[in-house]
Amino acid sequence: MYRRQPYAQTYGRDPVLEQAGEQLGMRKRIAMYTHRLSRRLDPGANVRRTRPSLAPSLLRVEIDSPRCRQWINRDLRAILGTEDVGFIEALVVAMVKESGSLDMERMPERDTIASLLGSRATLFFEELAGFVDSSLDMRSFDKYIAYDTREN
Image (cartoon, rainbow, N blue to C red; front, side, top):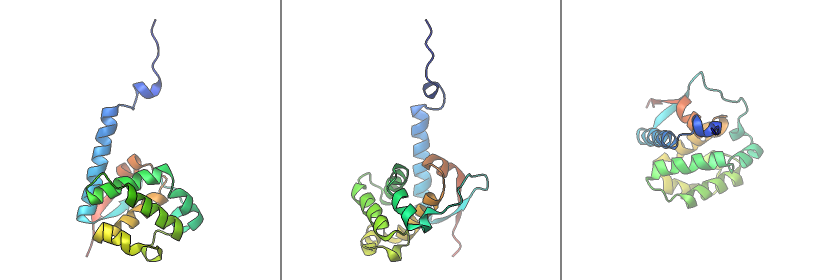
């Protein structure tokens, strides 16, 4: 007798394709931090109008969500070139929750995070604000967000 397989197993959940997507996303993030690219939003992207990064109470909840924690972890790995970023991830989340802001100037321990991330710290928080304010998951963010070289 033929058994139907669940939809998720037969369409779109190929682990090899998911891993390839994750690798492409990581390469894009590494390139963005290496070349200090500026973000621009694809007009076709579905982005909600509320901006949690500007509302401390919303930001405190959103920053600790699995969606944001996963993004923070991945971008820290892209910046630092190591898999061992758990402590720094927890530090970032704690700093944002305490300050209610993604503005480094308003964060406690900003010197600590600046020393850990170096010259990419400000860019990291700019990117984090863009991700937090979007309604996109990490894969969609990678797909819809495009980058231009910064004008100096």
